[in-house]
Length: 349
Image (cartoon, rainbow, N blue to C red):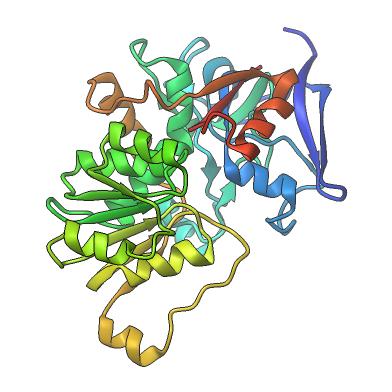
């Protein structure tokens, strides 16, 4: 193995990034070295580059990319159950191991969770190091380009639908923003039996795609009579669960507005915009719930791998393009400009 590799490096002080030659990292105790096959470009990655996310907790220089899949190239001391050549998905975060929840073994609810590509080096590189305890095995029947999506673009929607939103059979669901995350919210809501599923997006092409992937209806949220359309589609009931995969003030507040009394809004998309819940009197009388969502449980990825392998979850249309690591800038441009309305652009080192 060579001593160096190509990797993207983001500099917090300037907000600039470049592809550079850096030493190949060595796996420490309990860690593995993964040769990256594919890694997704996520909007949260762009938010760091664009300065939307602050620099708190971010190293001065970091490699981005947190939706990865590849093969184990080396195992560190003390690793059991994994071997070189195994096809794996690394978790997109790791518990700090020191907070109150971690000390009692509740790693899934770590207070100081460290996010891959934000707190430590990610996978826009030829190799990345990961904790062996967070790995998920990928069977040969699941393409690695689809497996790479599972570590965020699919697992985060899964967590939002199943854990945070707790969508039940027959519940009316709305999804704002049918891009890389919203697309999979639609598919997973359908998988758990939601009905009807209504997609909201300002782009005609995106709305058509949402219908093809499982939405029952698709509306332009800017239409003056959109509330009446939702009421008609749900026999006046409105929505039981609204998923805001955009994170803007307009989408967040429209989602709350279109909830039935006692309904739940799940915030998945993120921005720097502030939102309002209105008066406490009106909000409390409505009995509506607003739930923030981030991430997933590592066991969710294993569940998703099984669903893809069994043909129950089709991700064949979720990869809308692949760029080389050297052409990372082109992939970022496409996602920024919604060139071709990409669901997910992947980087291939």
